[in-house]
Length: 244
Image (cartoon, rainbow, N blue to C red):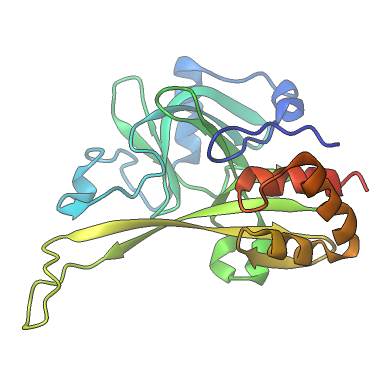
């Protein structure tokens, strides 16, 4: 069975083998090198403030409500113990330099990144999966949370942020006086084979997706009392499926 680390909420895929292949950069050296992978669309690099770009909009475009510690893998270099967050709405990584100023990193040169919440209790691994372009071309460049990754299948949660515009004019106004960020997420299963599916979490959908071995998977779910309506349930079922 594939090594799997499941945490509350999203799962975390271990990249220990990659981490050991190069010595992580921290501190001033990491900060200096990270400038080289700054977002080319951000001419100054520095974000004027963390919040002002979205002043007047309720909610947040970021994956986490507060800064968290993280790790970034760009090429063969790993940057560790960075204060950072992920802007889901704009699909870029923002990290805080030693002087406190935020800096935007474009996604193109980043292979994956790990992000912990401010308490250090939850951890998330983000990765781009070009295979998802079979569902939607925009997903090829988006980062998704890796819930499970094996030789045959991958299970991904794609966080989503959209803006609901204010509606305060006219006789049928809904009373929304502010634009507001709305949060959501979609799930994708890559494999078995070349299949890429957008899925909803249920036992029926899980067995349908793994229909070549659905009987064995169903027996496993029953024997282990696994809830196939959860992320953890799907990840465990996929880990079992990979052993068959």
